[in-house]
Image 1: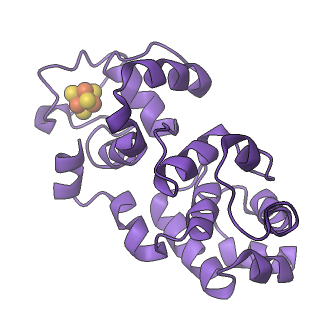
Image 2: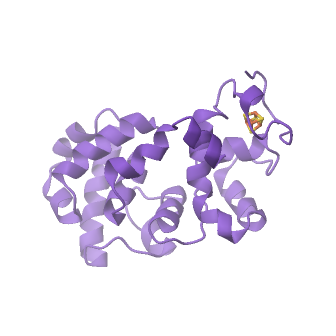
Length: 206
Ligand code: SF4
């Protein structure tokens, strides 16, 4: 998956060079990314982080200012409210540093299980799997899981995926989902997994 998506230049692979490796930047980017195309998230994240690269600076912006900076990401009004509250909570409860435990992360406004796991894996190098729409879809197509909920998928993947692969799984599957195993008409004819994939639920393919 990694090889094929990097050969095809999947958009998510440019995220790190676009926003850097900082824990606050990755938390903000991941929180912004829900239901939004990566290209849009990258541009919005850059605009926001260039104005407010720290929780203190983000807390000083008004919610309408944040809305304007992150528009047109999906649910930008709600996300602007959450991001403002999140920056205040990081300052108040965690001394201005992104916390490194699952419980602390999900206590932050707008941060759910997926975001928490992605931050733990990407920033803190923990063996966690963030299940987003790409991981959910591809795991079902490959027959690794047969579930409709990310929570159930997460529980199963945590059991069957070797620890050493967990940290990179989200990024690999997001990239693969953008470049090859797309939501509609996946590129099965050119997929390196074609021979071993049962293509469960794939109605139409290229
Ligand atoms: S063969 Fe098709 S459905 Fe299976 S992983 Fe590849 S692109 Fe996805």
